[in-house]
Image (cartoon, rainbow, N blue to C red; front, side, top):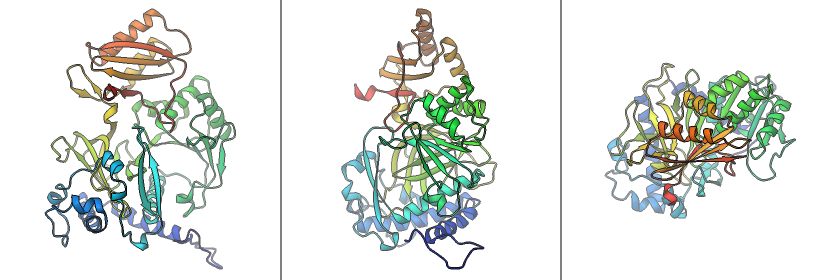
Length: 459
């Protein structure tokens, strides 16, 4: 595929390069398919999945064995009951059988193959392959997100997500004349200003005020901390219209902080490097629409059956268009809550909450698991005990939790006692609570930060 094309003497109506034309062709279809009923979307997904499974069974060593006993002749379109016969693919499977998961005969028309690495929130490296065609679909869904949320491509985008050492360092960061190749392949965009995630909150706030972008893309934890800093220190970012969040669980407190500090709504995205776009926030509501044209996403319960509205299940995703390294029924490690039809009228299935990975779950002394999500009222109570900047819970044993609090002065004995009482009342009276003060709670090298860590698996 060519990245650019020059069409002599054409000034209006304009045509982008070949890649831009392909993205526009996909966007035209996506504009129609988002309104299809769920049943029609499912029929097309199963049709595409059937082609993917045929390809995997004949060209991918790992799947030749795994799919050998599938009750399917390979000629007709897969039925859901046949699909569910396929075992789940785990992260360990990908790490252990990476080469065997690679297709020996990738269609030439899918373009060049590139590799990507991600550690997610596990700290365990994961290598995956993707084709140039897969990246074209990724670009189309990137632009769909911009269009859904009414962004003006001519304006300025600020980004705090660079994590490579030496990339976009403070104070200057880095600049680009466009929003990147996805949007730039189709539209004339405004510039992008980027800053490394390892800069301090104070540096980020100074950089943000100086750059004064119209949109800010970053991790939710960075956005919330930055918003609270700006609010407390009267740092103004007058042009900011929206905050775009990626990579972490988005909590209600982040939306609240961004509105209070900047009067800017938060628009969230759920994606993974190895799996592509999974869900985008609805343009009209705070729920998420599964991107059915990009991936077949299942929310399944412990029995392996689909979750109904309101139920929480494991996220199992199958990218529809990656024929270099098919990930069939990939248990990505996250959990999410299924939703019912969205009032916006789109037929794309709904997820009401994305809850994160298993290591973010709290295990009570009784052995029962629960999600340690804090409401806005919880955060108000916690912050009223002492002027903390950030907090993190670490479950060390079945009966022991450490509460790390970032605060720039020593804790008083009364405050420590109140924190201990709060944790027991919130989670379980059977917990032993250790309160630790620190000057700074550092994020991971990727810039991600988790306010709850379950360390039981390490004991």
